[in-house]
Length: 174
Image 1 (cartoon, rainbow, N blue to C red):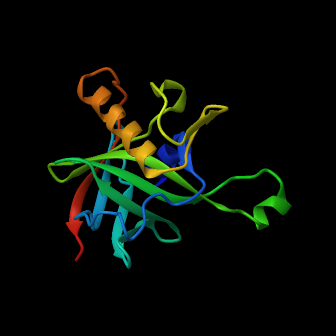
Image 2 (image 1 turned 90 degrees about the vertical axis):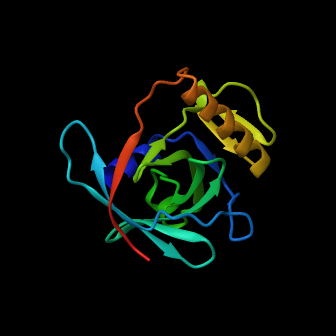
Image 3 (image 1 turned 90 degrees about the horizontal axis):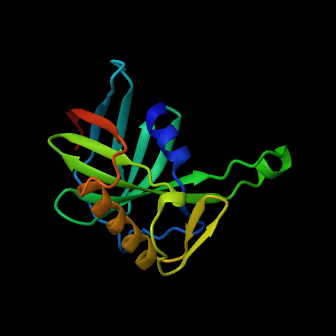
């Protein structure tokens, strides 16, 4: 779980409102338990469980995020995670508002590959997107969908060579 949360913390694509909801999210076959695949032989596990309204609970124990996914092609998805902004002030923490973070996810061979886009390296401008201090904020699904499709194309052509966080499925939940 720590690896996924670190990836999310580095994600620089966000929205202040949910762009994926029960109305437009895809049902996916991700429910199960996954083990981290990394060079250090980590035994971290991640659980993805189906929740109501085409939502999924991602995490383990007390650390869980609500996720929605949008199928973009045969293996690719846009993932939206509901998180909390991290204000420094204690008073502000009490009134934390949700933010929605985005990643590209590829599912292949029983593994999930999580890619965290970097706003500073996001080419182009997309509908409803604003850039500020290294963060791309999206206001509509059209913009985030166009941005993630362009990002995926750059991954597939080798223009982006970052290593994704990889999780291998070790059991299936229904």
